[in-house]
Length: 144
Image (cartoon, rainbow, N blue to C red; front, side, top):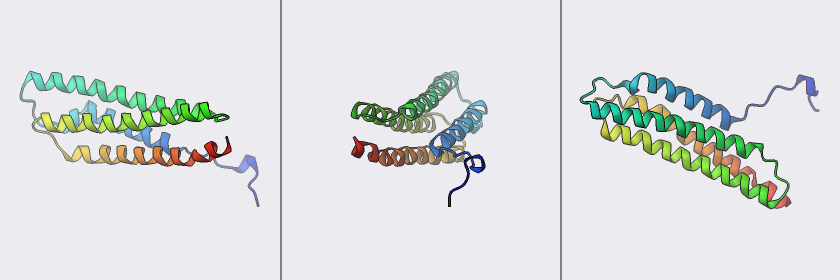
């Protein structure tokens, strides 16, 4: 028995939802300097400014790549490969985002490292969601 279209709930694409939550959390953490208790020198402050800008740009790139991949309706092999490329770029940007967070932990003294656990777990979840999405797209390739 099917549900009438007017009574269906709007589907939530988990890849986008998780990335929106991750982006929101990272921006809020950036605004509170990731729990830094003390800034030892001006060099660390400049380093953080550079990393913060890089993190915001990477989040935007991930959202853009997933949106571009989702916008492609696969009807031929070229579209499938283009969609796959955007998904791969999103995964690569997630990994770079994790490395950027790790570099902050490695360089800055006086960090509250517990603030990094949740974003890193969310990045791992995003990678797994994109990989699952990519795996589910194999059905398109088989139909081509």
